[in-house]
Length: 374
Image (tube, rainbow, N blue to C red; front, side, top):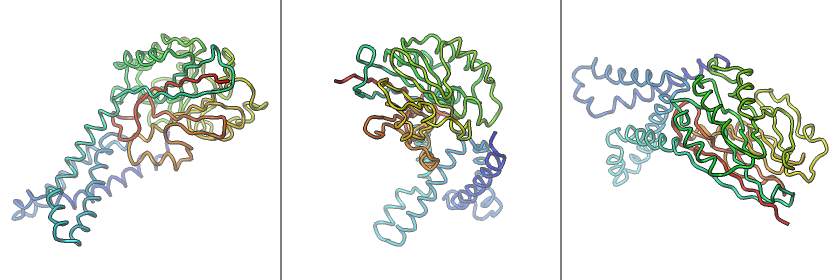
């Protein structure tokens, strides 16, 4: 669990600050002028509205606080722009007054963000990458499908009702290798969801195997007690034919798959890249799985040809997602060349965490085709 200071106290301080900003803006809404002769109503109605919003945003990790945050940010941005327009005067002030709609514009824009963000979260994409290598591959070609950060939850983007769509997209790629790069489950995953996705993973076929590295939400980093424990996860994955890799590697069809323990889960106390592959680069094409996008250069130096990570969700909520870059993640989303012979790819996640909203990144499976070139 997180420290109570971060889990409860700090969010409440932030909510109080947001409430003050909103209250001062609500006092300016034109309909309140009708209540001016009755000060109790004039000052009380905005207070009631703020209280309703506070109730809506009562969960420090919920959708409500995100939407109220957008509303507050839009009001703050609008106020600053309004001050600039007033100073400029003339046409600038008149245009601003027309666009501001007497303070209703932030509400309209927040509604638009909600509608657009929900559609964006639900749209499951297949993102394709094409790579080449001089190393030998089985049949000269390798197709890898990466599933990451599913976070199954009926309130989030991915849940058991979407399993047919997810299965169809994975099977359409016809993967030789299927990899799960962490946070496949989390503390909000109910037993029914856990069982449904474990069954799906068992039904999926990949000739070179199915491999899983744990993320920070699979077995720890919880805001509440999960419905499953490590033993249940290990048993379900074993039954599904999915091998969990923790600071170890496996050779399958001439391809090496390396799976690292999660950095947060171990507090950084895990094997170094050099310890995982002490003999360094060789002729085996090496797929390196690490939930968090960290330590790219050391992984490449140890022999990784392709590094696959998740964790960041491509940001998920803008601009808060930029924090991912400040948290020592080396890539927030997409493909990055690491040195001359290694490529790193960070997935935006096959689901969303906590709620069905995405204003940054995309919900996706990643399909990578690697071709052997002379």
